[in-house]
Image (cartoon, rainbow over all chains, first blue to last red; front, side, top):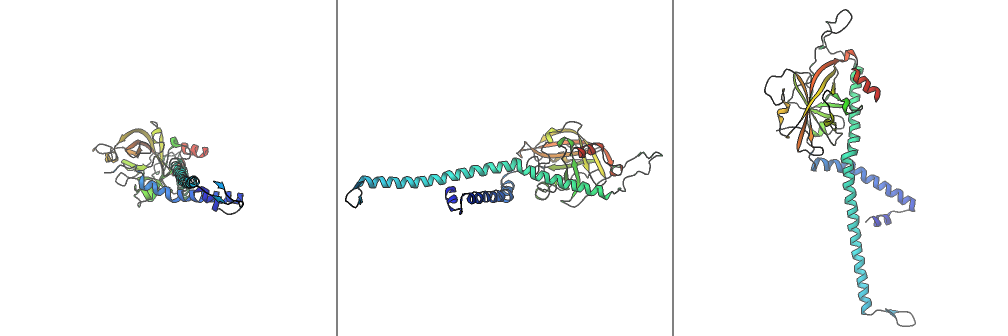
Length: 52
Length: 272
């Protein structure tokens, strides 16, 4: 999977490293911005109030 | 495998074919193992990332935003320089000392609207969070611009009775992260446009999530209220919602904005 991805990335080594870093930042950004908050609100009970 | 003729053409016997087949299937297995391995790494990284975000990063980011918006609100009030009409300084004597301060009752605001900020020196010099009306998770408790919610069914700020609020202990900026570190006598300041309501922390109890008795004007009792209380509710234990932690504080005094800024608040601001 990751090996195939590495092979697909075009350019010389340093360009590939740069591309890989950008990809990682994009993925982590999307996770933090959308996926993690969704997981938290959907699957984890974070209730702090008392209610009947 | 043998090399049969002068041209170097190869011919395979049965044993060779078996060997080739074995190699092909091993390659196939390797490819599957590769995918399994990558999936394992990915899932592991995702879980670690989520935990890091959940326990650490989310709180730092959201907490800083909440502190920021609270400070902005304080600055607005300070700039407005409003002397609230309820503040009765008409009885000041000849040397200008104030004899009587009426404790203003903060009027009820619309849901989700921030009307006060909470400053708790025990929670750190930076701790400054907005209290908004209502305990809606999405718009108040999870919000980066508020953080603390006022139970609408509890008393108003400044009213005799129980001013009850809720906030997260973990995640979403975790305003009450250090609620268990409060010590008897710790001051809790609630700032409004009018000034500072000063409370002293009294005690903590642990209750079930359905125990709404803690929100009564006199918590757990049905008698008439005479004192002003502050009740803070949050989840217990940390990272769980099985129980609730309830921290009670008793109203001590009101410090009108017209008199300046309370000494402890000044010290806190200087330390920032």
